[in-house]
Length: 320
Image (tube, rainbow, N blue to C red; front, side, top):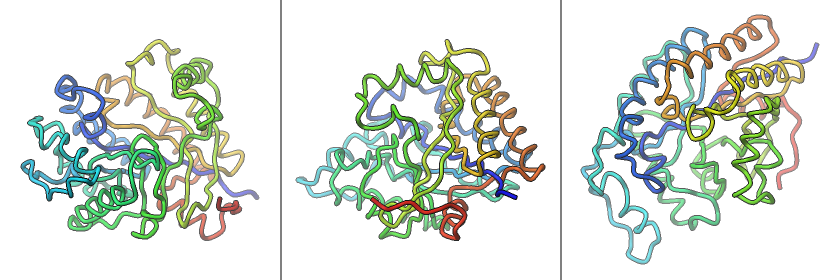
């Protein structure tokens, strides 16, 4: 008998940190103020269906710094990034500070994987920052989580910009989420073309890919399969229930192939229409639970997938 498939959920948990460098987060106040309540709703859903997930936290969510940081050297590029942080520019702390999120995750019945999404959501792609900047960002993030009693194994790159994997590996991180396994997410496709291709993928209800892990510079990469999208930014024009239907197809494909269906999203993106989106997600989790109870699917966190991979569950591919 073939092995069951695997369902993985990873959550980019960030509040205003995810957008402060690209938009006016004060203008999105309602979204970020509602996000902790959405997290509570998600935790109740995961408890009801007994689904463990990976919560990738921006570590600065846990620290009310008063806008005070150790100043980097003036010629160090991180200094410019640090000067624009919401905690240093007068943005209301409710939009970026929420230590209660970690408390709520720890209080859940299900034992979740608590991972990292950086310290300040600095973009770590090799073209976006130097190695010293990546080291500073990751070191501060680890210090905060470890002080809070969390020793993270999992990492989600801000904006999925993968880089400096050696920095993570040297600091004990075991696994990270890779970019979605879709041809148009590769670098050879111009960035301007990707939004339209993503929309077509959703509108046509294309079955999302299932994936397998691979070893990358000492880390286990787990590519994404599908983003669970908000109902704004154009996505409200996609067919009703399309992402729910696609996710169910992905779960079934995982059960049939023994591969991984990796669903991911930002909790803040559910805040604009929480009732509808949580209902859709509830249906997806119910399908996963049914397949699990039938012995066709395992539900694992990213950290658990990495352990299973190292134990030989999937065939290893060459490390580039």
